[in-house]
Length: 527
View 1: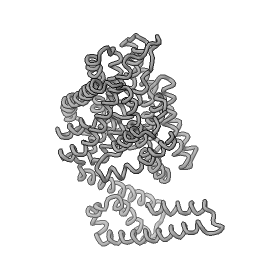
View 2: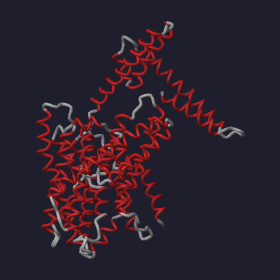
View 3: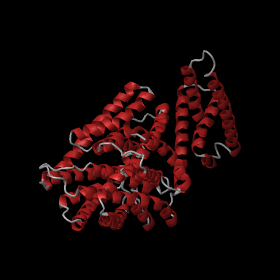
View 4: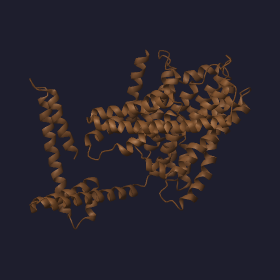
């Protein structure tokens, strides 16, 4: 098996792991990691030959962009306190705790190298946390915090990692210089993200075609990451900024085709890249095994100790952080916070490490500036992989059981109420627009009544329960008739699609014209 065949195996696994994981109750990222471990143990499977400095630029930009599309800037702004406590403060605390423990238990490990280890294992993986949490039906407030933490903690951790690595390689360290680098990195990243977001938004208006617009959205995260890194900024923060800008300002309510196609496209990209990323984590296990060199007992003990510190620090930090956020929450009822000790425990156990930690561990330099080997590099890599495997596999496999045991589930009634409220707003907006049209256009009474019923149907299509609150406008028989009309119309459209699709194989038929007509029928079917 060569490298290309291995990539196809990972892509196939990424697709298959989703339904298999749903059936087994195991998150797909965990299944892909286990698949990677199995492949790594097979003799005929080659070692992964990807330069470590390319892992983050290749995998993180599309994963971050896909994650940001599921949220919004206002959600981040509303939850800035819990996100700051987890994504910034907790990363600092975890890095220092891991650094001091590693420095104490690993003989001869310099404090700067130990802090580099702490930085690379500090951030929970944004993809792992959201992918696992999203499949378990957790309350939306928990998923929002995990998304915010996962998206912003890499920014802090990667900058701290580079500061620690620079201290080891160069032999000098200045707290003031490190602080200035952190601030400068953030400023440059935000500037690059805003500039690219603004430019991409303007370019989308010029492109017009949905295919070209979606293609541009695939290029933007890569461009933001690479340009920010070239200017010594944070590539992760640049991607987040550009994605949030586009999500806020590049959304046209009437651009149906781009929105539908873009949603499908990014779902596919997210599934494939996530699968490959976690498959690579398992495949890279051979690097960690090779570094053990017969010292299994000693190095496994170090890895277990550091993993215990990572898990324990998160719990000890979450308890007072949740309490503090609740106190502040009394005056800000729009923030998403854990509302019980059960939700806090689920948040604690959701802190899995993943792609970023692997890439940073493998990117540790081999030598310092004076030509000497990087101190205890093999030990750091082994400990890092031990922490990643312990948190990702152990926590990932047991999190569904823990969620079920504690009974932490989403408030479906609240979601239904919100959905119903949106349906009512949509129907009322349609009715207002109809009244405005009637003021400037003379509509026959029959057409006006028909359009009024259509406005009501807009809301019912979103939330069928809305009909119960609109008895004055449409009684139950009308709703039943509307559903019957939709069913018959759906069967008619299905017959039309089959007929048009059959014409594609007829002699002299132009496939491009057939596809264009079929696309129009598909869009009509979604209305």
